[in-house]
Image 1 (cartoon, rainbow over the protein chains, first blue to last red):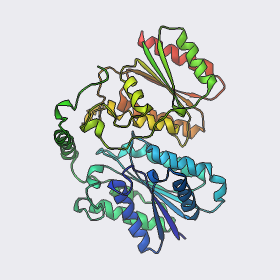
Image 2: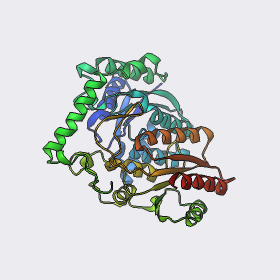
Image 3: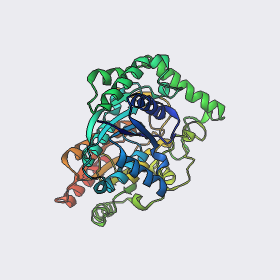
Image 4: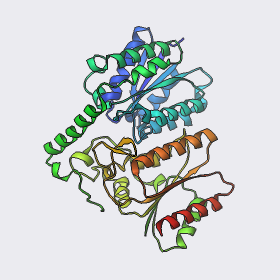
Length: 221
Length: 181
């Protein structure tokens, strides 16, 4: 049913970072199922050539999987730009049946904050006439971004859920509640994650000679 | 009172109605046409958090708007509603408010956020152009979520459906003036 999949990476980090890592987990599983996979970073599709590649890749795809970071509880502007380009060209895509799925990673321990962004993806799919197969929300994005999420021991349950969700999607089936639940499992207790996160920001500030200025208010009170 | 109007739509009628209401008060108003401004979205470099705290490294219109936001008393957002989210330029602009937030995770109203850098918080009015009912509802939900991050002094969301726009704008402006008085 699904011969060609398009994986869209929705982060300005393009082929690096958490979104790319999660996209690869999906892509590898789909390839094992015999699906031809094309991966595109949406932030690399802003030129005329890039837009053409986005449109032709979409035209060919049976399944579109978007892997993106949560920005301001919504979809990143780069993703929005790609959605608009595809929507503007909707008429040329005909009535071919296409499926849509998404995985959103957020920097917070509460995966619930991804709900509005995933809903926007679903609404995009609705406007495009696609069948939405569901969205997975993954908390503690900084852990996901450390190396390959497919082989990170603290993300074993999450990665297994992603692979089984990719398997379902390769058959045009909606993801299950268990896959959603397991994909959103915390890699570490929130207090530990937040402590490490805040300490990391201080370390970065220290490295850049900005530690004493982290709470500065240069443009107001 | 400093008022910043961020217009991602370019509808003279909508901006005209807002300006008409603002002209009735003593406001220093700045209307910025986001739809034709030079801006891109956040590139997630974190320079504004860990290298030059409070200032974006990208030198475009969004950088200056974020600076003006920090001293505004009222910010008025005017956006289309598409896929239940903002117009592209509004999406880009909101992302670029990141320098106005702190890097640290802190709990506010029961949720972890990166809290505002500045103690002075503007009031916010969101005017969203009607799309479909479900996209309108989704936009309102997103705005509620964004206001949990921005922690404005007050905020109100108004969906403009073209029927009673002028009256809706007048009512929202009256509310904002009352809150700022």
